[in-house]
Length: 186
Image 1 (tube, rainbow, N blue to C red):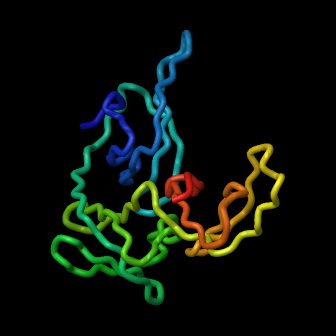
Image 2: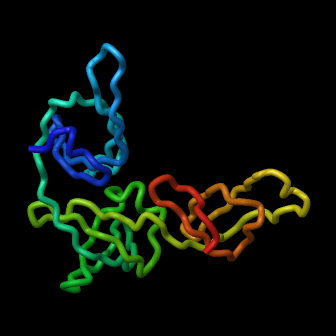
Image 3: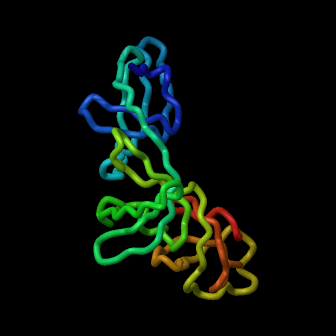
């Protein structure tokens, strides 16, 4: 059993509703006369959706045995994304609707991780930072660099993000896949 004192980012467990979740962020709060609580932001591994909740320090949760295997994204065809297990070279097809948030960062030959629970592929985890190419953006105007201004840019995968003015079409940028934000120029 896992208690709230064991919480850390990336921990995977079964919550009180029987859903398998991963801790994205957590904070321990205690007000002067009130009981302590642990506020947690969780990602549901089945759907990829996020939920915020609070737990008491005495709450216990069921531990989940997770095996991580290296995968490579190959291609998408119809409503399926095809991955290859880098150890056994087996190919696995995953429905695109199961990859809600991940699908907007997938590019061919991308290294990722497959999470297996009870020998069944449960989720695909992308690297935290990925390098993508700017497909289109408006040119930055010289003289607009006094303050920290941003502009919209479309990535090669079709996602629109905010980037600094000095980024141009064709530039490679590093993206944070957790928050869909620009990190730096590659």
